[in-house]
Image 1: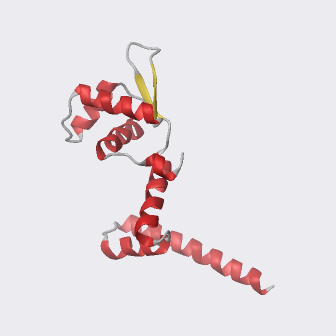
Image 2 (image 1 turned 180 degrees about the vertical axis):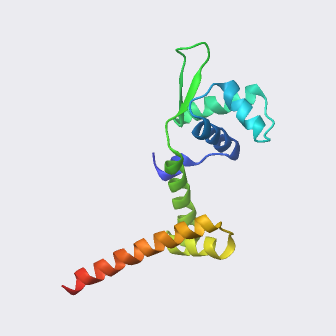
Image 3 (image 1 turned 60 degrees about the horizontal axis):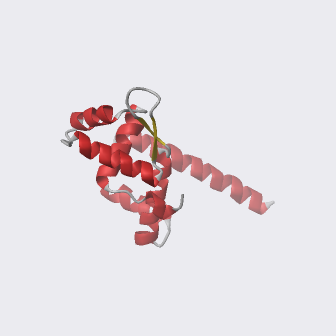
Length: 137
């Protein structure tokens, strides 16, 4: 799938999130999870979204039991990476650093997230040090 293949509406994303979080599920299972998350939708609406997602290749269904069971064919990470690349292209000329800096300047992070960011920065810094040593030799 290319970058544009991951363009999804918000409702479709909510259905995919339900499947990513809950695993393979029936229409009723997805409906119940969406209701638990405060999204009041009808059974037929969820079925329509699952059918549409299946036609687009994001989910597949299995009818070996009493009801269709839907399973994602793409990971959350694949969709996230693709959508972030589109944002980087559209708003930041394809550059990741300005996107990250914008998020760091404008968003709030938990202490755990800050620690993870620091760990990643330290890791990148260590890679820069080792590549600088390689350039010298």
